Structures are given as C-alpha cells and as structure tokens.
Image 1 (cartoon, rainbow, N blue to C red):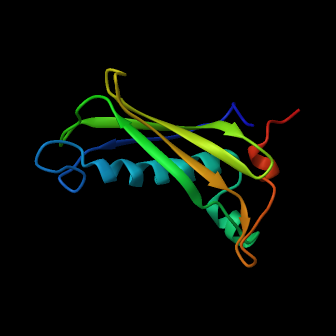
Image 2 (cartoon, rainbow, N blue to C red):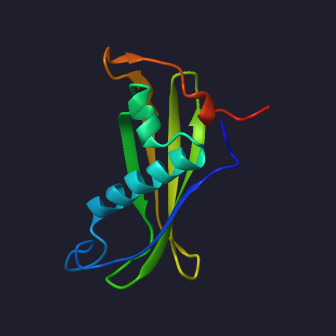
Length: 132
C-alpha cells in the first residue's frame, strides 16, 4: 500500500455545500470522491487511465464522523490516504481540516477493484501498491 502519496484539495464552503445549520452531511461525500480522484492521480493512475484499463473501484462501504461544525465561507482542506489494502480491495481514509488544522470530519470509503465489463473482482492496480 502506498503511504507516500495523498490526494489533497483546498476549498471554501459555499451555500451549495451547507444547509441552514452547517456543512451539509452529504456534501462531505462529494469532496471525498474528489479527493479520491486526486489520490489516484498522485499514484500516476488517474481515472482516465482506469477507464482505459476497464477497471472500476465501486464503494462497498462508507462512513463519516462529523467532529466540528463548518459553515459557509469556512476554508477546508480534505486529505485522502490509503488506510488499508488487500489483493482486491482497499480503504481510503479522509480528513477534513479547518485552516487552524482542527478536524471538522473524518471519513472512509471501502473499495473493491473490478473489471467493468465482467463485474468481477480484479487485483489492486500496481500503482496503488508500495514500491519496493
């Protein structure tokens, strides 16, 4: 499992991201997906290459723990890193940080690697595996 890469995005919350009280819970998942794409790119295996290889990485489990309120105009950074990996699946862990580095939320997605034509499990791409 690669520990030398991360997917990182900085963004400002807008009214499209929040409800009447705070950062809308489902919006965290959109940013997790975006930072996962950045993690893939950091591994030199962007989505475009996965599409060409006919590989997909569906989420089979996910979760998010909301720890500190975030509201419109707050600036957050989301960081995605591999949390664990087996031969045909992997977990990505996400941390949402305020500008002062306090944690707004922590999330995860569990992915399985599949051939999109056959929908059968396939090995994790070599680009995601630690280099010896």
